Image (tube, rainbow, N blue to C red):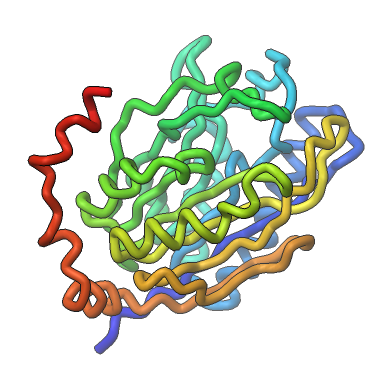
Length: 289
């Protein structure tokens, strides 16, 4: 019997685009996502992933320490506790990207993974931190991840996480594959004109090179007062052959659903023996540069 996982991606715009009230923005975004998570569950999703730092705007468009106040402990903060309750309520595995405060002054761009019983399985911390124009000042907010490239065993498959800018680096994508990932989720915040041409190039390439499913998420809309560009949505699922199987819209809040046949991974690997034919002993120079 085939192993079919129904997976959901949620892309959403800022719920309070004209507000500067950090508490109100966070509450409104969480409320919006509670409804979208319920929709994913109603449509039969077994696994659901939210967008990068889902409960706020992409605040890295400016450098202001006020945003530190939106960070929480993981898993002991209120947002992850709420998501544990929702995961249990909907019997759905959840990947929840938030702003993590590890200790005073040390912050990470983090995704928590929760199983369908509400149990916290662990977290991934974004490794590659950009600091570039226009308005991607992430080193002001995030410490580079220090937890490696974990893969989480769930009822609905082995799940890995890569976050936004990570997708430009094939090394971590390969680590996730070698660690056994069957589905790699990449929650992102990226705008048109900067790297849109790479959006459907790099991640299908990771899927092909590592022969797993990739689930890519991007938020939608523009965010004042920074207006660094249009978050162009187009969240999608890509199969182990590099083919995009389901794609979201460019400009609206949406739950994107796909049925992923995890047995296809073995079928593709039986054809393309990329892991067998690797030559890791010849790649030693990569880590020395």
